[in-house]
Length: 111
Length: 236
Image (cartoon, rainbow over all chains, first blue to last red; front, top):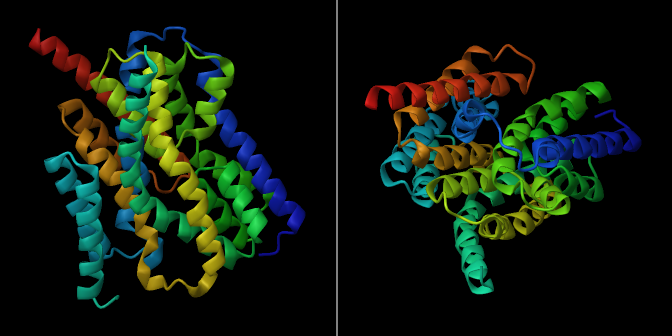
């Protein structure tokens, strides 16, 4: 890293301020004004529309394996998904996901 | 509303927030470790984690700092990773709109993927919740998350390079997000939105970092809303 201390602080403070403005955007400006029906309908799918897209590349091409498909991580992702969908219980899904990950890492000789 | 119900709603939120610690700890520690190995000092690491409070963008910033990217580019790309927060903000504004500006600012500062997803699921399942109950619930989920995120980062930064790569801490975030989403896949529109999001994000990986999930998110939300409209029409 060649960035100076000052440059690091600029990154930290600008990122902090910008992120707050993104979070505050609608909460601050719109208040309780009603949005059109189609907007509120679309907003119901915010979490389920954004998070899978954020995760998918990390599951298929993990940085930890230099972008190569890793069976252990792939298996852990699918087990977490299946158990979560079946049990509707987040903690069960997380625990079985972690167990699968470490079992997979051990089986593929990465542990 | 009596204060006793506010208290019980808070503790319900608290109980729903605690499981997140399982993955928040490895994720926060990993951030601390990577920050230390990138060359940030302890104060810089803690300032970033407390003020930005958005793990994925913090990692993006560290990655680009160690690649010696331009300062402006680092800021813009890391902010792009957080664009989804504006969508969360729009969704939460529907629930927290009646609160004072100060309280809305407080909610905005504390908003992360985990408390947003959990709150949205809860508010959707209980349409009759009062705004103060919604606030109590949101603060309840956040109460265990926030201090532990700071503590986990601190421990990671302090341990530094002593944490072995084999611990696979990198996969803590994917597992959390999948476990968050899976229980929500209970209707056809929810599944359609999630599948669209994955397919689009994988197709758009060539876009600058942070943009793909946004475009994928917007298309996926539209698909979800469209599926809901179509299903309402065919069933009526």
